[in-house]
Image 1: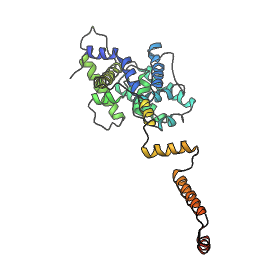
Image 2: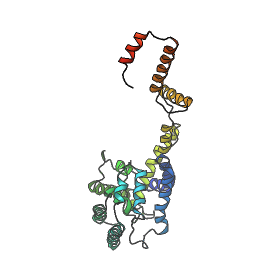
Image 3: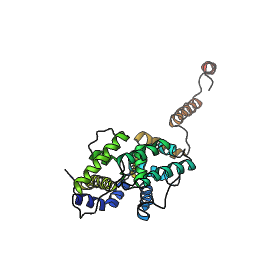
Image 4: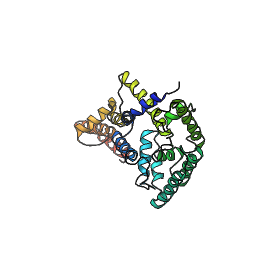
Length: 289
């Protein structure tokens, strides 16, 4: 089913609502909200980013943190990102952004977009095509983010590889959506980034609304982790914990049981003396403890 200009514009108007729904699904909702506001303020303050000819380690970790909270978790990615040094990041981003601005064609040709993404991915540790596209999407409306939702809409088969080949195909798909959705001259043109954000918004809200309809409101992964931590212990664990609490120490239960049995046996032996010959044999045979 083709998306009309009205469909995409309506979805785009709900982008912030979708961002909040996605925050509730993330591992850290508050951090997601903070990063979302920080990065999207770039669009509001300066849509063409003329004041920002480069960026360094002040923004690079924020981009990747936002990506990890929004998509698949990769625990080693941020470690790799932090291995980049400030002068190198500034030099690379200055060169890539300058190349984008030097292109006179609007929208940017696919070859220019792919070359910029490839240059960023090859020069920075921890940055692949998907992360590079995410970063550059904040600096040009002609560069869509490579989201799972967009890959799904373009009918890419899983598992997604987030490769340059897939990205080229996404660019062609997004342009085809724009060609169908923008046939009238009197409508406000949609950028490639607009299309990606509209498709992402629609997918996220459809999922969120379906959960709400089933009586399962969006719950963050952070809350799920808290619930897992407070899971009711088993009867054996509860009994062991109760025993430790009542004793006021942390001696293992098995050791306490053995000690009590030895104490009981000792007490019994004290009340009923054994014959002298038997006591002598036991003293000789008893192992050292």
